[in-house]
Length: 395
Image (cartoon, rainbow, N blue to C red; front, side, top):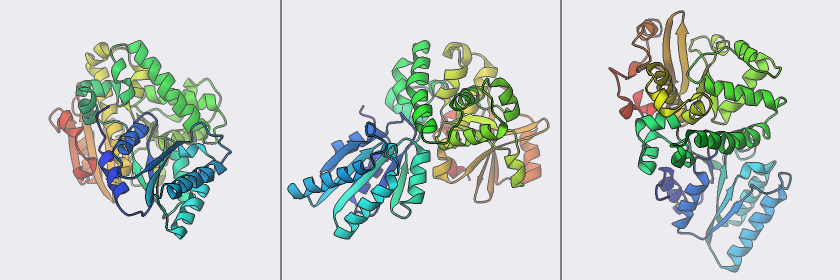
C-alpha cells in the first residue's frame, strides 16, 4: 500500500533524532502498526533489526535478552555506530517491561546507540508494563482506528461508507459482499482481539460472559442500556459488578466503551446507566447491520449509525486530546455527547435523519453553562467537516 498514515513522519523524525527514549507504538489490532513500521524501515536511514514476539513462548522472557544480545553482536561485527531495534507484539512476553528495562539501562551505561521501537496491540498490557517498570524511559505513540479522511485517501471511500463500514483497512475490499465482510470482521478481527488481547491478558473468569457482553454492547452502540437489563439478555450467569469490570477492560482495549452520564457529582457518574459506544463502527454494523442499502435509506436507523460514528470519532481522539467523553440525560431531555477538558465543558448534539432538535441542549446549557454548545449535522457543523476536525480545537 502506498498510503502512509500521519505517524509515518513522526517515527522517521524520532529515528533521526539523538537517542532519548524507548519508543512505543500502541494501538488496536488491524489498524496497520506493522505495515506502518515496514514502510518506515523501507526508508530508514539507519541499519535496523526486526523481530516479532508473536510466536514466542509467553514465559520465555529471556528471549528479549537473547534478542538484544544478538543485535549488539551484529552491530559490533558490522561496526555500526547506530541501529534501530524493532520488536513487534512485545506484550506477548510475560514481564516484558522488566527485561526491556534491564537491556535499555545496560545500553545507556555502555553508551550504545541502539534505538528500540516496541509495537503492541494490547493497550492494557502495554500500559501496565510501561507504568510499572519503564516510567520515565519511554514515549508513547498512539495509532488509532482509521478516520474517514484516511479511508477516503487510501481506498476512495465516501463518508457514508465509512460511517457504515467503519475504519478497518483490511475490510475495504470486502464491502460489496456483506456476508463475507461480516464473517471477516467477526472471525479475523474481533475473535483474536477478544481472545488474545482481552481474555488472555486480564483476569476474565467468565470468558463466555465477556464475549456476550461485547456482542450485546456493539449492537447497542449509541444507546443507553442498564447493566441490570443487559444481564437479562445474557445467557451466562454474572452480576452487575462483573459486567462493569469487563466493560472497563473492553474500553481499555479500544473496542467498546460504556459512557457515563455527565454530572458534577462524581458518584452520580459512576452509578449512571452506561451508554454503549463502539470505537469503530464496523463493530456496530457486524452485529446489528442488515445491508448498506437498507440501513442507509431508513432515516431512523441511519441516524443511529451517524451518532455512533460521531461517538467513535470522539473516543478515538480522547486520549491524545486529553478530554473525557460523557452523555447527558434527564427525564425526556438528552444531549448526545458531553466533552470535558481541564474543567471546560463542550456539549455536542448530533442532528440527522433520526430526529429533530429537542430541548436537551438548551436545558443542559441552562443547568451547566458549558464553554460551548454545538450541533453536528443538519443546521450545524456539516458531517464532512466535523470528521476532519481535531476535536481539541473545538474547546
